[in-house]
Length: 591
Ligand SMILES: Cc1cc2nc3c(=O)[nH]c(=O)nc-3n(C[C@H](O)[C@H](O)[C@H](O)COP(=O)(O)OP(=O)(O)OC[C@H]3O[C@@H](n4cnc5c(N)ncnc54)[C@H](O)[C@@H]3O)c2cc1C
Image (tube, rainbow, N blue to C red; front, side):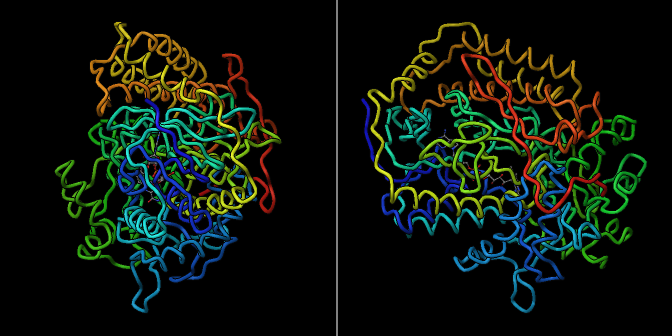
């Protein structure tokens, strides 16, 4: 049985981007709904610890041009500079708006929003670190999510919690809504809409060691691709330097913002060699590679594949690496990093005030995704046309403000700046648009996909295929890449896609059937792994998070362009789009 709904504006995803968009849209469009496979406040945005960037200048001088420069340089010049300018200019206002909604930011003694340092954020075009990250202890994302959810409830946004979108209704480049499964009952729901915004987050679950929640499987990113629409810059996936050893759980970069340093087996602060100026506050791609190089040269702790992040007051004071070079105390660190310290204690049994914390790089953030313009409208091809009525914002989108590597704190600000733009753009669109006709049987593909999995009698187990995919992607399409290995990963993923056709699941019931839905998500992950490996193989240069050992130089002559991958008649086609350059000419990146 299918249930039908009609909403002028639909948002898929209830993380920071989705809620900000819904909030803004609902200010003029009373008939706005949010569909989320998770209960809204369980979205991954809630785990963000470090902070949200804005050049407020509350602690020391700062301005949007310095911030824009850092974003462009951090992204290794693949950033579209018109988008970075929007981000830098609109960030302060968006953060102050959150403050006015009631978000409990940390405060300076005179009542302003307190700020801290973060990797790659500098004053005066790279001179020295600047305090730009606005935060609520190390629970910033949690506070953003709670604040926005409350505001949406106040606005009477209608929520469909624990509904999983399986398909988009797109015909003739016009989006007419989505098809979802209600997880509780297994029933199909068709949502007919004028405007639909996708804010489904990332897909770190492609890799074995990841900071990403179980739910980050890139569902509608894969659906976009299956509808023959392009994905942009998929080779750029960020590995965050400080994942808990073996688990991948993230320890926020706020640690280094507060002065923690990387230490190898010889007790050396090795970032002094790799980034003499910014040291431990170099951008994430640089830090992750440096850690791997230390490990490769045998300087991992006890010869193993990890190093320490050392946040003890003794070490911070020895190197004068605390904010402004000031002495730090155990009480202060405990106050500003409560959750991070608790994680070290609970997961590792380590006392962070007395000893180093074992860490290794962890798959963290998708710079690439669904291409959009500055109004968050989804592009139908590399150059030119858009998909009418379809918008995307947040981590699943690629506008592109992060280019080849995102700076810490720049995702949360992306969510609120482009979430807000998305909400406004939808509201505008809805006022002038009619409902495009709903095709006959829009749910047919969803029903077929789910039934195929339920009825599968093959010998293959989804869990086994998932582990194999994650391993080859981690080994061969991770921090370091080399042509023949990436090719092996691509071949393996394609074999796994064939084997995926022969899966079977244990549970055939209707109620809360996560067995079937997770098997469906695996299909999405496989498609995204394939596009990632293909894009990585194709880009024969090193830039940002994409590091090719066989092509170790950045090549602006041939590769200062975005990659687009589109599925046409079962085959991937590659095309390109030039990077938008406005204020900053590409230069060699030094930290
Ligand atoms: C541990 C961790 C710490 C981080 N710390 C920071 C930080 O300090 N600063 C910073 O700037 N960035 C940080 N990031 C990155 C940042 O938090 C994320 O990029 C950002 O929160 C993503 O927000 P989003 O709104 O795009 O999606 P998410 O918050 O991931 O939400 C995705 C939403 O989509 C829904 N969804 C997904 N698929 C479907 C489907 N098929 N049907 C229906 N709904 C669906 C989910 O239910 C969820 O509501 C961190 C990330 C992690 C993992």
